[in-house]
Length: 317
Image (cartoon, rainbow, N blue to C red; front, side):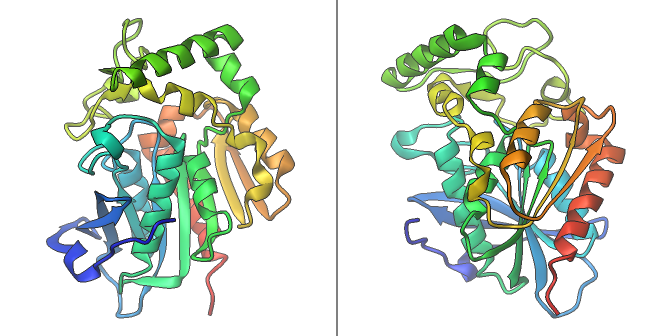
């Protein structure tokens, strides 16, 4: 990873707000020449000692104010510091190279998570011996990549993880022919300098990434003002050729997964766990949809309890 230009004093900007029993602080950090925007969540009632910390990342196309914020607050309410951020090209963060935005790039997002982990390790509120990762949906794979072999990270939690391989990709995206067609779209969009379409739309909408309704399209759920609601077709190839379910052996951290057979691609989780040789806890909830894991209070609480217990199990005296 490239050397990070990290300046803790400058990055901890004076934007602090107390919400319920959680304090939030806006911060910035750098990765590969871009400035990323993040939020540090802290328990309002805390002592002087640095805290065990959780870096939280969300679903594809998401911004930090969506499901990452929900889980960061849950972690802070349980006594952890938590950190969320916008990936390069999304939300309030700077661009990817060549001023590109809205590309779902597994490689770029993995690099950003590594930079975020390195950044939080510089903060005085953070116990550098107790940093953990929590990946939700698509970022689960990126988080696995970012923490594997990373000496700064102790444990990993995944909630509703989207862990795909070539078989799952073809099943989801119209078989080999459908995948090949989307890769052609990706090449054409990249050659044109990008092709931006809406990310979310109502059921049956055409010309959008997710014509499915639900979370991303509902104003009281994911369709918040901060959400970009955009997708760059140049990102299809990187996404479709990304197969985290097939490489579980790279993970060298104790793992906790919370998922449901009613949520997205549970077979990816099963494939990953079958090849993972480390210490694993898997909690399967009944009748919980993918979007329920994002913001349904009961399901978020249950998932947060499981991963928090997992992280506490690693606390060092």
